Length: 529
Image (cartoon, rainbow, N blue to C red):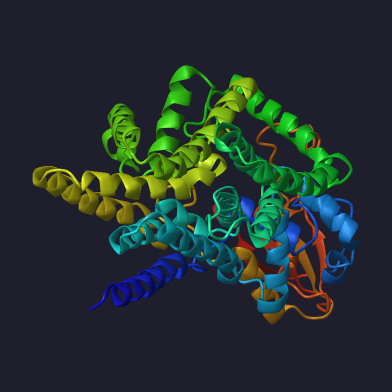
């Protein structure tokens, strides 16, 4: 069997495996947390809690009222006031399109993340063919990407992480081609265009991808000497910055800094009054920041991924230091032209971590210091892991044997790190556990089956102000359940609905003769995810 046949067979086999791992049980468990906010913004054109006037107690409303047109300006404003002040514009737009054409099922809307993560895996493999001459390491990189827990877990969330990861990786890909063109081909205009477009899409997927562009600038300052390439980069940077600055200063993005300041103050106030919530709201002291750094850095490399979880943070930290020394030993005598790719990767890995540490110190809490915010260098972590494996497998036979055994064991445990995802048991990267299918879809289906003319639907109002937000202070009612049910109703449904502040968990169908039918009970919040 020739090398090409082996490569093609391995590519399709691993890509099929990767797709199956990402779609298996993808719609079995309900949207949770930020996924619901994304759906409400993208499809409902409103924030959760943003219809308090329409749905205030004593007033009735219909699905047609919920779906009343609000215009593109209102949608952009809603998106900006949403999660991290509009950081998911591209993903939310894609979510709107998919929901319109293919439906609003949980598996369907999560399919966007599957698509973009598979595109990221494909792009990494395509890039690897230019980095590694031997197909062994090209296949190894593809295999590592296929079983990467971060990729698998976030492929099953209707959030922007997979989308922003793809555009950030594509931006780095075109940037690399732009500043290191093949001598016989020269600079290609399509690489400049690709860099500009993917960078803009990355910025409008999440503002944090600005750090990717900063990392590109740092690398250029350290290594780029060509005036022609500098000129093109400068022109491209201006084209990238103009729409982004316009959005941030004149458009909806101007809410960003205010949102960040308000959220940071709420988290700090909660911490000071109530104490920490381990793993989420913690003081930004040396010990906590060190633990988070060990977690994030470890999970960016195959060789150290999840070791801290199995053996403790001290072991994980020592393993990370030893791995870092191994990387230094490998790169210090490596071919300078090939080494520069890995140096670029290390910049993209370390810069977001340093910035988020500084941000955590400024905020006083660690609530913004997670791999999902610092992980845009993860593809480079996989490249470095494979490059290091190539280095180790050139050593004496006993080292190769130990390394091969470790790679096999590590791959085994990484697969088991995401298997709980398929049963919604305690899992890596997310706090969701024990969910049923989407309760709001169930409620909508039951209402379609049981509602009769003259009936009234009563929604519960469970008021929570977990972080004591000034925006929720004094709130007497909550419209979230009513909004989320209406998301799955049609404007043509002639349902009369209202909020009942005396009910905290029960959705009731009140017949015109006064009898009440229980449609759904959230069981004191058990089924609110």
